[in-house]
Structures are given as C-alpha cells and as structure tokens.
Length: 129
Image (tube, rainbow, N blue to C red; front, top):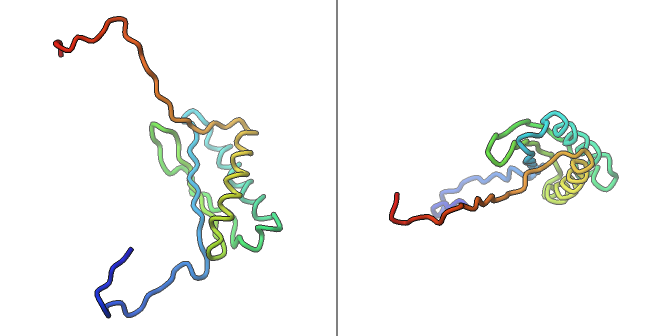
C-alpha cells in the first residue's frame, strides 16, 4: 500500500493493465537433479499454453530463470508465465497441478519439512552446563 499526501499524486500507472505474471518457485530436494526438473517446468508450460482453454490467456511461453536459491530446505527453481491481466491465478493453478503430476511421474522429489528427534540414554542434568 502506498500513501500519498492529498493532491501529491499527479499520475498513477497501472503496470498490470496489459499483462500479468504468475511466478513459480519450485523447491526440489537438494539431492535432486536440476536439469530434468527444469525440463519438466518447460514441458508443462508448453502443455498449458497449447490447452485450448488456456491458450487465449497465456501471452508467452514459460520463462525459466533457473536456480534462484540454495538452502537447507532444498533447491529453489524460479520461472514465470506472462498472462492476460488478472488471469495469472487461473493459469498458475493449472500449471501447478500439471507440474505436480509431471514431477511425480518423473520421481522428482520435492522436500517435505521434517523434524528428527534423538532420544538420549541419560536424562539431562540441569545443574551441568
């Protein structure tokens, strides 16, 4: 949200008037192979774009940015799809549905948060530091 003092805003531009973007961040396992995951992202983008119900909503092919982040949670791959204004959510939901199915079929793991507990043989002594 932007707050402008009264009568300060002379011109306001709506930058999503002509198009919108749906941004995809896919997190894959640190042991996963990046190449096939990126290929699947491209293939799914092409598949959605050729679907008659989505073709008029998608203005360009999926743009793959590549590896965006390495973290203890996994490897983040980033991409975006240019859509008609306001249609990014509809296109994005279908893209993600198809992406999930394609990743499962290719046995590419997405990380699942987990917590490991280690049981100690002896109870902790609070008097020792």
